[in-house]
Amino acid sequence: MPNNRAHWGSRLAFILAAAGSAIGLGNIWKFPYITGVNGGGAFVILYLFCIFAVGVPILISEMYIGQKAQCNNVQAFRKLASGNKWGPLAGWLGLGSAFMILSFYSVVGGWILDFEFRAITHLLTGDFTDFEDGAALNSLLGNPWRQLAWHAVFMSLVTWIVYRGVKEGLEKWNKILMPTLMGLLVLLFIRVMFLEGFSEAFSFLFSPDFSKLTGDGALEAVGHSFFTLSLGMGAIMVYGSYLDENENLVKTSLAVAFLDTLIALLAGLVIFSIVFTYDLDASAGPGLIFATLPTLFNKMTGGSLLSIAFFFMITFAAITSAVSILEVVIAYWSEHKKVSREKASLIIGFIMFAVGVLHVFSTNLWSDIFNILGKTNFFDLFDLLTSSYMLPIGGVMIALFYGWVLGPQSVDNTIKDDNPVLKLGLLWACRLIAPLLVVIILYSKVKELFA
Ligand code: PFF
Image 1 (cartoon, helix red, strand yellow):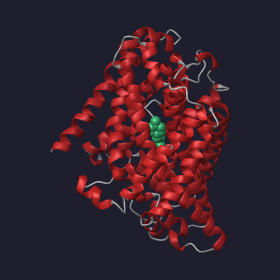
Image 2 (image 1 turned 45 degrees about the vertical axis):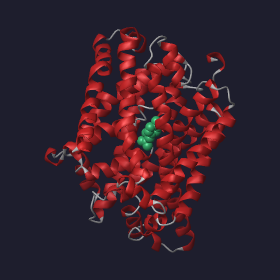
Image 3 (image 1 turned 90 degrees about the vertical axis):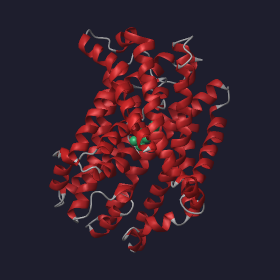
Image 4 (image 1 turned 30 degrees about the vertical axis):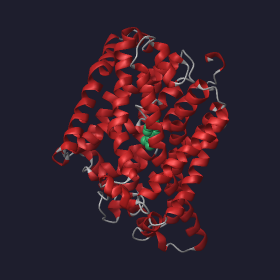
C-alpha cells in the first residue's frame, strides 16, 4: 500500500496544506475573541509560550509518525509499534474528534458563507441594514433552514475537495486558497494601519498586563494551542503520511507554527483596530466577527469591499481546515476498509452533515431538550469536549508514543544534524512537559465540573 500512495508534489505544497489545516476559524474567529475576553497581551504571551513549548514538539511528533508509517493514523500506530496495545487508541480517539469537530465547524463555516453572501448582496443592492447591531446574526440564528442550507453548501465544498484526492483536491486547493487568504489579510492589514484604533490594538495585543490573566484564561491558552495547530486528532499526521521520507520536519513544523501564529496575530490586529476605532468592547465574545464587526464595516469608508474581503478570507481558512479533518476519516476508511476514496468521501461527508443538523436544531427548534439535558446546546458541548478534553488527551498520547515508545532513536531520525540540546529538548518536551501541562488543564477542568 505505501508504495502507491499519493505524495505531495513539493515541500511548499506540504507546508501550505499543513498551514491550511492549522489556519482556520481558530485563528480568525476564536483567537481574537478569546484574546479579547481574556484581556489581551498577557494571554497572547502565554499562548505564544504554549505554541512553541507544547505545540511545536507535538506537531513534529505527528508529522514524524505519519511520515514514517506512510499510512492512515490507526494503522500507523500499529505499524510503528507492533505489540503496543495503546497506540491505536490515539488513532481511534482522533476519528471520534474528527466527527465531532467537523460537524460544528461546518455549521460555523455555513454562517461565514451566509455573511459573505450578504456582503456581496449589499454591494449590489446598496442596502446595508442587516449588518447593523447584530441583525444578520440574529436572523440567521433564528432561521434553522437557512443555516442548514449554508451548512450543506459548506460541507459539499469540503467533500468535493477531499473526493478529488491528495494531488487534485488537497494540494491544488491549498495552493490556491492559502496564498489568496494571506494576500487578502495583508490588504486588510494595510487598510487598518490607517485607522485611529491601530496603535491601541497594537498595545492591547503586545503590552501584557498580567493582572488581567485568570486561571481560566491560562487553561484556555493551552487548549487553544492544540486546536489552532490542528493537533491531537491526527490531521497533521495524515498529511505527514503523504510526505517523502527525507523531508526535514523541524524546519517544516516551525514554518507551519510561525505562519499559524502570524495569521492569528494579524487577524487580531485587523479586528481590534476596527473595534477600537469605534470605541467598542473588545470582549464581545463569539459574536465579535458576526455582530460587532459587521456593524463597524458599515461605518467605514470602503467598508463594503472590506467586508467582502474579510469574509472571503475566513471562508478560505475554514475550508482548508475542514478538508484536513475530513481527510483523517477518509484515509482510514478508504485504506483500511478498501472502499474507494470517492465513495468514502460521499458517505462520510453526508454523515458529518447529518451530525451538523443536530447542532443547528439544538440552538433553536430543539433547545428545550438540550436545556433539560444539561443547560447547554450540542454545539457548546462538542466544542467543550473536543477542545478541552479530546484534542489535549489525543495530543498527549501522540507525544508519549513518540517520546517513550519510539524514543531517542526517532528523535535522532527527526533531527538529522548533531544538535544534542535540541534533541534533548524535543525528547523531554514530548515525554514530560506537554503531558504535565495537559494533566494540569484536565485536572482543573474536571475539578471545575464537580465544583
Ligand atoms: N486548526 C483549525 C483552526 O484553527 O480552525 C481547527 C482544526 C483543524 C482543529 C483540524 C483540529 C484539526 F485536526
